[in-house]
Amino acid sequence: MKLQSLNFEYGKSFDVTSRKKLEDYLNAIWANHKLTDNGVFQEDGEVHHQCFLSFDGNTARARNYIGFIQGENDHIEIYPKVFKDQPIDTKEILKHLFFWFDYCRKWRFPFSDVNLDNLDNVDLPELIINLIANQIFEVISTTPISLYEEVEEAMLMPKGSINFDRYISNSLSNGNFHMLECDYEPLLFDNRLNRVIKYVARILLSKVKFVETRRKLEEIIFLLDDVEDCYCTSLMLSGIKLNSFFLDYQMVIGLCKMVLDQQVYSNQYDEQSHWSLLLPMEYVFEDFIAGFLEKHFSNDWHVKYQKSDMYLTDQRVFQMQHDIFLTAKKDPSICVIIDTKYKLRCDFKRDNKKGISQSDLYQMTSYAFRRGCNNILLLYPNQNDNCLEKDVFSISSFNGSQKINVHAAEIPFWSLKGCLEITDLLKAKLESLLNGFIDG
Image: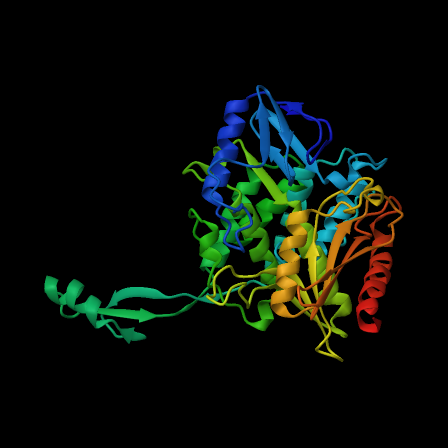
């Protein structure tokens, strides 16, 4: 297997051993995915080919997805572009990733307490498998789960409710008057969720190399020995209802969905030579900011994520969707539209437009006028450890009745001093920005 050097989003091109196999695999992921959660892999318009890597001959270049692709002949790891020109090692980058994931709600990674200090030659796929295996094992070993499952069965004695439509078509029509078609919901250990967990454990077992991780996955399969082995998809996880005693399984469901969503399915899943974890950094940045605001600022602000309750036109078409919408609890007339922009603006202080895209400004201004909101906040990741001062643009309506203030600001998204520094720095920065809207 060809191990690639450290790759970054939109970084340098790298050689691939087998372009056709790799490209076919990525196209299959793109085609099969159609991620249900807010269409993560749905670009504007219909895209029929993969957008993870761009190819040129036998070389490839990362686009806007981070993670890894482990193929038959290639092992590719892709890291965020904010670290591209920084003197930082892989372990520190991974610590930042897990710190961001801890605030994300779209991807529930239980990795905030990961200790990478004792690991040498960190391999991202192996690390992810190890963390997933540990989390699943901890949950199912301490809190085994049984769920009510719907069962349809022909019985001599009635149980649950009798399904008369099935009784007429299956029993009466075949002369089996004594066989009652019943629907009932027994409490089963062999349920959908446990079947999915066991299936995911077998998938990961076929990918893993570390002996310790392999042993953990084998223990998971052993604990679920009474559960049927069957082919599973992430759709089987929809509609599973958990009571408050089993809330830890929400994390397990998220991890299983993450694995299953990026599988190219076949009947011989144990023999698959590819697996991957690819996440669009725009959504990671957006989800991180939304989660951070919700955790640290919800006492003073109503935080609405992906708010989309209004339309641009009176005909109720062209639906607006803000990344984040804030309303002050003490004064509901104070509101802020926040748009996260995962862009590096380079030397934007010398630019009259301050590195802001004109299309972004058009979009956010129309949203603000339509909603009657005077404050727009564009948030960008920092380019170094010293965040520069914010830039402000003012836009007045034609009759002068409304004035929109657009604030563009860098925020501490990463730090060469370590991710432990980010929480306090980011809280202080956001508090200063938001207090400006209240005081102004």
